[in-house]
Structure formats: C-alpha cells, structure tokens
Length: 232
Image 1: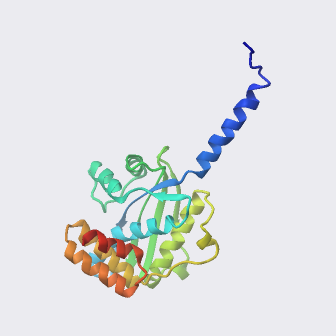
Image 2: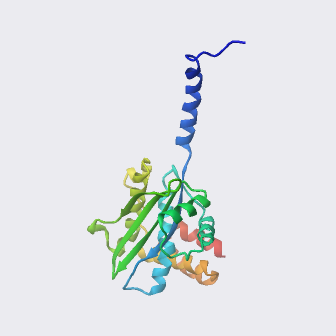
Image 3: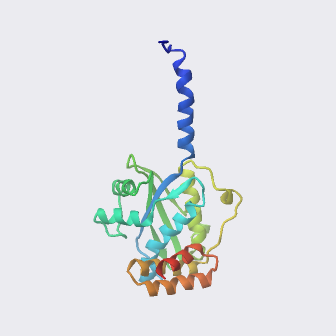
C-alpha cells in the first residue's frame, strides 16, 4: 500500500479546508433579538412604551434580515429561552444571560439593549453579544443628535441595524449600499408595537385592531400584515 508522504498530505487537506471555509462563510449568521428595556420614558402613554419593548426588537430583526447573510432566531423560541431564565421580558439582561438565551435559541450572536423617549427625543442603545464567549462585541446607538427625533424612529432602527451588520463584519445589503431604505411612519410602527403587545397578552381582537391601524398608516407594512394573519 502506498504511503501518503508529508509533502502530499497538505495538498490533499487544503481543498477540503477551503471547502469548509466557503461553507462557513456562505451559511447565514443567526442572531437572537432579545427584548429591549424601557429605561425611563416620558411624554406618552405607558402602554406605548411597554409595546415598544416588543416593537423595537421586532422591527430591528426585520431590518437585519434584509441582509441575505443574516437570519433572525425564531421570536417564540427566544421568548421561551427568556422565560426559562425566569426573567421578565422587559427586565435588563446582562451579557452572560443574553448569551445563554441566544444559545438556547440556536443563535451565534445575541442583541439586547434599552431605549428612552424623553418627550420625543429618542435614544436606543443595543449590545451585540458573542454567544460563545459571552462577551459584548460592541455597543451601538443613535448618538448622532440629528437622528434622535421620535418622528424618525424607523430611520433610527435602520441605522442601528446597519451598525450591527458592520460590527459583525458583514457586507451591507444591496438596499443599504444603494441607500434604498423603507420609511415606516412612527404612527404605523407604534400601532404595530401595540398589536404585538396585545397579541402577547392573548387579546387577538385588540391586536387585529392595532395591526389594521398600522396598515392604514402604512399599507406596505409587511410585518403588520403578517401580524394580522396570525391573529385572525
């Protein structure tokens, strides 16, 4: 039997290593979007702020998956993992717990954070966490004073999604590279968030009303249409 010499072995191994690397690079990056905490907001009904604890991560996830290299972990599975940690969905989550939740949801990275609305001045901070190491890779926020108006909430979340994509060293989506971003009116985003809140509480009829209001304000709102289909 012919022996494989040391000089030939690397030649045989290298193609398989290259194939493995190519597969790893082409596989989607799975991100778990965890609930966001309201760290003290004023100027609107408290129910709106409770709703945004769900609406902001849902909207952030919808923006992230516009990138073909990203897949967002199933929201129900993330919720299960959060409850398994005996955590209130809106409570602050440290990096170690976020990593544990992300791992249980089958994700490579986890994103969590908080927001504050001070009479229309809106700030969101998001932490990008490596699930394997439990370390915070980066904290991103809308720290540009020109992008802190609540009326620009959709643009604020889009900017955060772009920063998260950059933090993970992923190429921007074609739409982002071309500057083509959808503009969801804040009223539509708020109604969608209220729909998510009512749906989470089992109030399907009330959820449908809010989803319909979101669609009235923004007829192209795919997430609100999906919400309506779920509660019908």
